[in-house]
Amino acid sequence: MLQEMMKSDLGPEYQDYNIVIAQPNGRPFEEHQICQKFKALITEHNLKPVVFHSLRHSTSMKLKISGGDIKAVQGDTGHAQANMVTDVYSHIMNDDRKRLAKKMNDQFSPLSILKQKKKQLTSRP
Image (cartoon, rainbow, N blue to C red; front, side, top):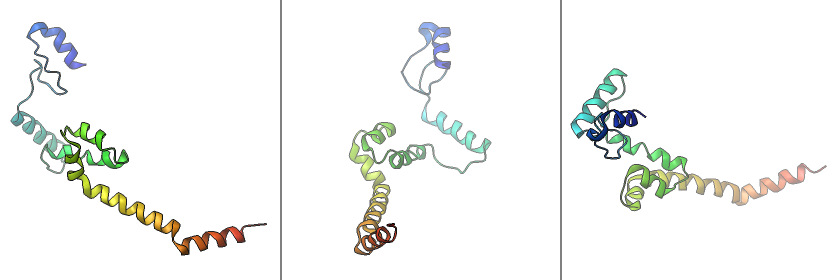
């Protein structure tokens, strides 16, 4: 909304690069400007110091939340190839696979099946 106001106020002087975060004249910020603002934000709010690029990796949570939708994560992180996402976040997918395997083993192991049958027999009227 602020960008739209700036476009209107500056008219042809506004340079629209169609980016999310822009300077008031529409031009992109340089990397050192973003880093300076990010460091100031961290200091102001007493946050754990991290580099700006690490925010990209927080999208790994999106991978878990989306159920492993690699293409969605690829688009959100700006990776050109889906295999980059699977390479970077494979440890998360492996953890999920291990949990699913354990859950299936627990449900379909002979001991589990016997317990289910016993429960069914004892719960009959």
